[in-house]
Length: 112
Image 1 (cartoon, rainbow, N blue to C red):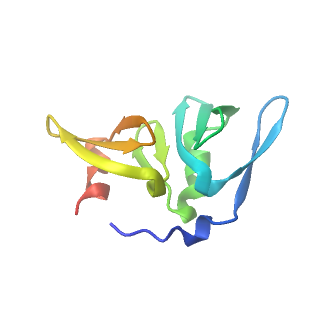
Image 2 (cartoon, rainbow, N blue to C red):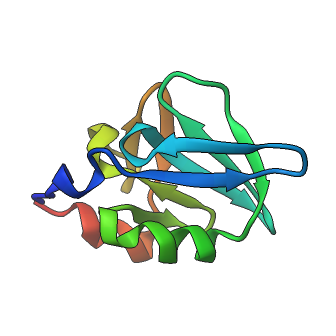
C-alpha cells in the first residue's frame, strides 16, 4: 500500500485539554487510542496527551492526511508503521514501540 505523506508536512492541529492547548505536527503523531470520549494522542517524542474527544472526530479530522482506523479504538498514522506481522491468523502492526492489533474488518488495509 502506497501513501503520500507530503500533505502532513508542516501541518499542525490544536489539541485542547481542560487547562492547555497543544499544537502538534500531524506528521509527529504515531497513533491515537480512544476509550469512550477520552482520547490519548501518542506523539513521536513528547508525552501522551489526553483529550475529551471521540475517535470518530479525530478520524474525520485526520483522514485526509492518511490516518487509518485499524480497530475499534485506534487510529494510526501509517507513516510510522514499520512492521506488519501475522500472529495466530491476526494482523498486528508495530508503530513506534507499540504493537497494535488490526481488527478482522480492517485487515484488508494491509494486504499487499
